[in-house]
Amino acid sequence: MAVSIVLWQNGRVSIKAPFLKRIVLEGTKGDSYPYTIPLVQAGLDLPLTKPVTFICGENGSGKSTLIESIAFHCGFNHTGGSRNHNIFNEATDIATLQERFKFSWKLKVNSGFFVRAESLYQFASYIDEIAREDGQAIYRSYGGASLHAQSHGEAFLSLFSHQLNRKGIFILDEPEAALSPQRQIALLKIIDERVETGNAQFIIATHSPLLMAYPDASLYYINQGEVAERSLRQIPHFQVMARFFSDPVAYLTRALEG
Image (cartoon, rainbow, N blue to C red; front, side, top):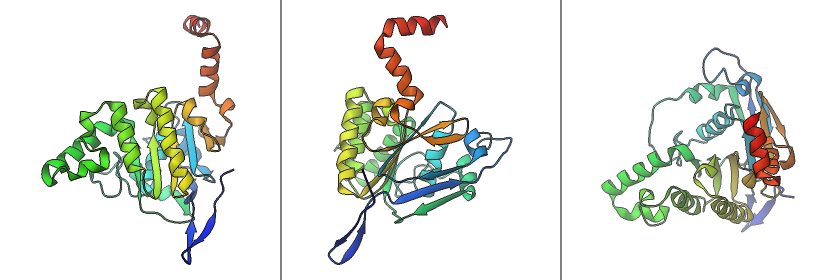
């Protein structure tokens, strides 16, 4: 079982992940986005007790809104990146939610990274622009080449392997969108290596049962505004795939006729 550990190192206290330990959202109703999302209307009290937390739910359940709000609070750009990346500075709808959130930290960390599958292209273009202005050295942090010169999946793994190699909080929004099953396992290996150091906390929104199966992670399911911790076998995503793999043709035949 992964637990928070306090160690003495060179006479100083070293606090291990998880650093962010609780997220509370005051429920608020409204007639415009994001206040029409059931999760926002219901509110939540989400304890983060392990270095890796997965958040899943159906499309529109509010998981990406929650993930983006966490990233916003940590100072990351809403399109992805770290605190040092200023891709776009315009206000977002999520910014209006921030006064409703309360974040409790065991140790406030200022480093980390926010990765969004849908905005990788924008982020890659941003890095290329910096390279044109300041030289090619920036590519060393992304595998030595432009992310645009790599396939979508290769670019994602390159980004993960080079940017997750630090102390901090790492927020991933549906990383499986760019990754084959084999590459998802490669991502989990990267995450596991970082977890072993005690210096990294991961909060991941996903639809992937393969990612959700990571050992000893917290797994939360959002359903009609309610957020509850579940086992993998209780998650509808897993149940659908389990029925599919038991007899793919029969399952799809029934699904298409239903």
